[in-house]
Length: 406
Image (cartoon, rainbow, N blue to C red):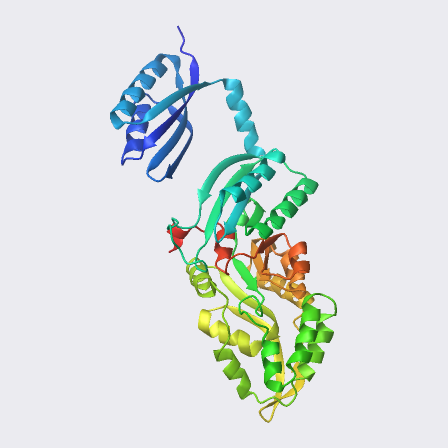
């Protein structure tokens, strides 16, 4: 009598022990079973292992008997589930459907956070294929500023553009609960980002340098008012920039060195740059600020490129003018495109990070645009945002895991 093909799924759970997967798959190998799928997860020394395999009816009984004995010997539970050929073929057909990565990031990721995100996932008919923690194991007591938690969901299903926008909006609104959520298509470009471009003021540093210069020139209030209006998108950046620089006329250049040494560096910058360089990313500063301060950060942290505005100097003092083209929003987007061409990468492999209205053009064209502790108008327009932790949160949006990079 001809043997019938059988498809069987086994699920093993219990205390994790060295060699468990090896001893179980050895049994399958002995009977020439073909593994169709396999997955394993470990939480606090507790193992969950699933194996889907194909065999024949003359071998399946012996395979299950030996697996049952081995499971008893190892002290774990095992469950067998027969899978029909129709169900299996239906499962295979789903592999062409879109996959998305949803990243939950914050000082803490709570049960309420997870419930809110997974509710949105379920309401849009998506299936969660995998959940993994990207941050290190959480101590019971942790400094609030240093604390960070990140969980990544891999989900599957079909979404039209309207559904994607609706999900994105609901996820962005969760920042009010202390949670940042990134929603990205899991395609080849997400897995091969190569270039990250940063705004400088209020992104890499926790200040606006032009405001610092204005304080030293005695025109702080006037410049801050123009800066705030520009960052809110109320007035043209180029016009506001010209007005502000003019107010700095006569300031001694030695002031710039003093300000550079005292720059308040944004949390997570050093760790982020160390890891990005280690894994081969190219990094750029595209700033509406000044090249002097961009070059200071380049020397200190190893940025590959700096494009900013050059202040004109005569006899050791600022003239109130600048030289060259203003690096405004349009120019930032243009520079991002040029850097992608120079690095010979697709625009979809780029990342842009910024906080102001003049960052929106580059955020909108980058493969991954992140509004970082951004103004309300910018956050409302951007597709991704980080508002809860420092710059090293970007690493998790890139899919990097603490245990692999530290």
